[in-house]
Image 1 (tube, one colour):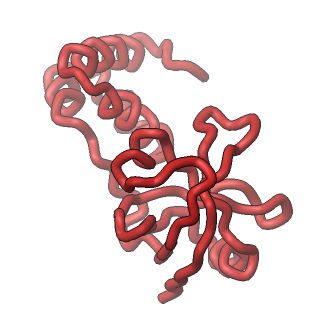
Image 2 (cartoon, helix red, strand yellow):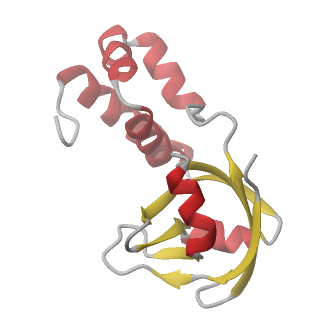
Length: 157
């Protein structure tokens, strides 16, 4: 199994929705791209998370990290970090928030549409819901998502 350790820096990623990333040296990212591995288990200063390999072999690769994750890991932009990377043994696994699971259990048309989505799209929706700090905001997002799933009005539909 491919496993790597290296030091890098938290950088701004221009043009990205989430503007923070950790560059991955090409001697590490190239074998990942060549093996077709995009989902990774990443440790940043010992703080573990699941992430996707972003960028490209040609233009450079990075791991996207949000401000909340940086705070939890105790690092900021331009900080030097110790990174460990390994392939995710369960790349299709998605952590779906309880509020979303409950809504999907009660709404068959929304659940049918959910089941037809790609893992990446599901992961994005699950993150959108779980990133809300307040329970009422998570519930509001779930109701909105369930309606969009049911009516086929998700962005990109």
